[in-house]
Figure 1 (cartoon, rainbow, N blue to C red):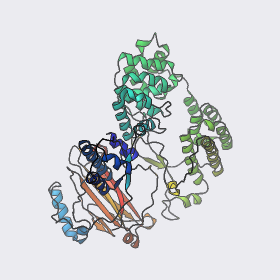
Figure 2 (cartoon, one colour):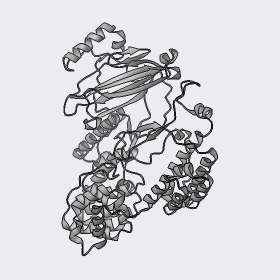
Figure 3 (cartoon, one colour):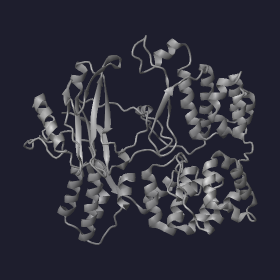
Figure 4 (tube, rainbow, N blue to C red):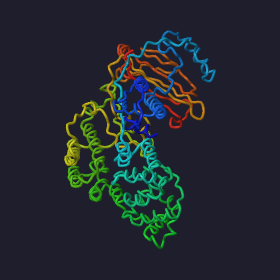
Length: 591
């Protein structure tokens, strides 16, 4: 696991020098096998391997090559239904393709078309090899500190790596813990990992890094193995009395206990059932009283309720003045205040007095939000001219609002944007204020030295959260754009393995022309069309299965196809997260 983390995070490995001298053939064998997988060993790594004892070198080389094969995809067998794909599919008539599919389905996926293995030419498409070096112990341990102090939510892979460090280091993890932790969810995750593996470190960590009642709720959810974003309900475990007393101590010291509890009353009722605050009535009166009021429904007035009541009666002045008490809340409600206040300029001026206290991620979100609002301001004809999905000048789809639900989910919701427009100059003023604050903050940071920013990075979205990102070699935030390589063939690919029962995942590609007019589809019932070829539908994958679609971009363009939309469908209805492994993507090929 150590080298797996080092290789994934640093493109380096951990290996100690030995006291022997290995022959050139032994070290060269490791280097050649690594190069066949697309990797080159650094000079330092080669020199170190020369000194490693034979038995340890054997174990290390086996581990290294296994990890490199997994990283490059060479650990899987990519055998499609038609082993001679794509030529075999192209040369087979439609009637034979149909009958072959029937035989495959009737056999529950065991029958395959009989064909001799094709005599393929060597692969000519090559990439720059990835260099593999040696990581120092300090460099490797810095991975934990960097992840624990991240300012955005972590992915499941990140959490798994943190868990490994805590379980391995135990009490020795203390020097690696960051002195400050700025992300609430990540703080709860680290505290939960310590709770399970090193209980003696939990109390000092909590007292140093957790200040609000919501922090303690997240901690209890983390200990229970739930969603620390609090986006989904979690079943809470029962803790021993000593642990409950520690939580009560922290709650009693929380300055915003009552307000935090009423933000999520049902969650706190469930926690109260496990916490038993009545047992601590004499020693923790404030917390006990807060839970008693919660059970009786005696909700005190809060800032959020004052803002909501003011907006409900269209009193934007009262709402704006309340928001001034909490700059982050002002930022999140800025759009509705700009739309409902009689003077948007007054709202912009008021926000300018507190914008310096808004966090950097929220300011970045505001810039992106109001730049979009600015681009959509103006007459209906101007809006239509900017919509990228328009069919024609006379038929335009409405602008959509997209919502990403909080929690460990990759779902995305969209609805027609019915909000009133905000004047372009007002939106531009908000963007200018946010940019000015950010530039002022960045000017105070240490210089980066001589740096170059690739213009292509302008096509990538900034990932402010990673909690729902998939386990993948390279993670790209939703909304990013990648340039298509100048190659004649684009190959879509899919690989999956059965879950608890037979699993049928299908790869398909829909073709569209000018004005997004539907042209055709490549799928299990249509294996070749318009210069594209499907490798055949496989309906069972006990040892793993692969499907491909080759797209001849020159032929597709010649025949008027401008867009291709790839789709994965689970025909046996299993969620992808329940499968041992399932991944898909695309590659550029010269042939």
